Image (tube, rainbow, N blue to C red; front, side, top):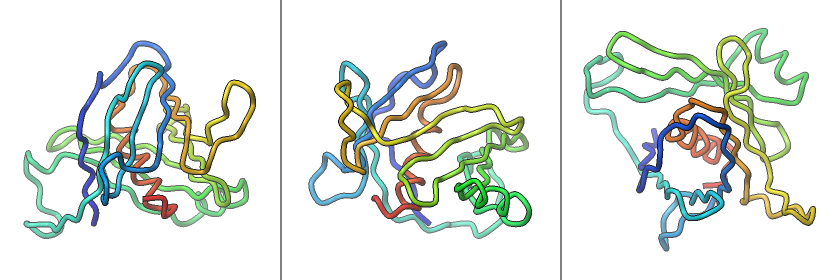
Length: 169
């Protein structure tokens, strides 16, 4: 299992929709990760490293906060594939006994994904970056749009998972 390591965490939420540029390359030589930019600066760098569980499966403690991503199966998977998206269930552990669920839909043939909440409302979207002059940039340069009042670090962690799923990291 891979563990996501944020290097710098910017403002974790915002009251307005925000757009970021994600470069699916690490700024640190010889490592895997990505860099995130807003219109002014580098917001954060994310690295991916190995991780081994110390407590085994099902161990619940206060330090075990985070998220889990699993491929959906059944009717949701069939419906997703018919629309061209592969669905993943995201479970975020907010506290020892409280969780929140999302669905991350990655496109089958293009580098893009959508993250929706339980009710189907869009939380964030990632797609290829298009310059102001209309030039489509490389497959490793993406635009990430995050809706208001959503934790940016969670969405960025899911983008790193998206990169791992699509073999970009």
